[in-house]
Length: 226
Image (cartoon, rainbow, N blue to C red; front, side, top):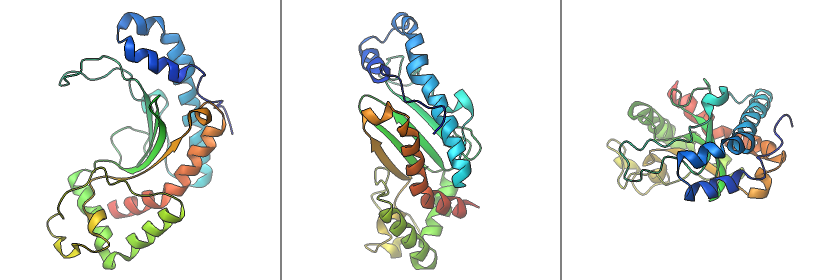
């Protein structure tokens, strides 16, 4: 597909070892492995995906290393003071920034499981109100069409971030088909990938295919936020 040849053969093993060697000395001694098997492949993957998305007319892009999350953990307010994350993550948005634009594609590489996710994560209050209004609009016809499109594409909205009660103003939707989605705080679909695929060039095409199948969700959310 392009420059991406797969994550390095020692990428997942590096993170497994990092769990037990949470020290600057060990990390610096193995930084070259992290760069060669994790960072450089991730940059190549983001580049290939940007090219694929331009063809697919999916308005997502990366901004080089700035799109890859730091491996250093923010431990200022955490009980766990382990200094390093044991996974790699990267994000693509319409602007290429990490946190300044709603609607994203996220890529996660970890010994515990590799996956891609797309949609709107922990939406800010004003945007959340707009998306909920779009869900309820017209009796939910557009959202029902979206749900059908996702189902056809073998994707399901995650219910991980969901209110226990209907938000104020939407009580009339109780126990109806819009009850569950209107209570969501994130609108995300995910797909897991086997480790063996992540180590091959085919992973780029698999993520691009996932993004294309998730595009109806992104388009619905972007339209709601306009």
